[in-house]
Image (cartoon, rainbow, N blue to C red):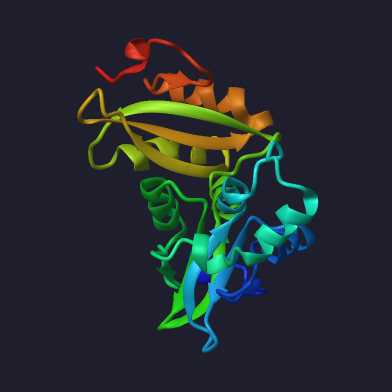
Length: 223
């Protein structure tokens, strides 16, 4: 899945000259967490998050009067507190790459660019939703884990077993076990009603299947 297919294109933007007070009102009214800051040519020059705004908002314990506080806030402009070095991604970025970039930079939103133009925005919530869909997360499915040697043909062998039992694999991913070099956990989801049947079929062929949390995975590792 590419970001260009899931990004938000109904963008809420403000100019660098927007006051902090107005920025707060826009975020509250639109029920969003980020404001994209663009100049008079429509070019992205910064980003302001709800967290940034709150961090720069005057403390409720201030000794200033309401009139004085409002006057002070009317003088604070978005350009004074916005993040100017904005991490962006192109429209052809994959969802998993976007998730990686967010984690690396400890951010929760990425403006999306098409050539040099602002095309959209993607948030960590959007990315999480897509990834959950990709792994088939639902109350009607069961998660199974099989630890295997990272070798040619093992995936084909496992899927063939379930095919013979007419069990549909709703999702499948390979999870390298860093503490056990050469071993991967094949994590799959099948319909909940097929869970026990799948476990029995795999175990009958010599695979050890984990269907829940265990503190020690040693008994499940391949010989």
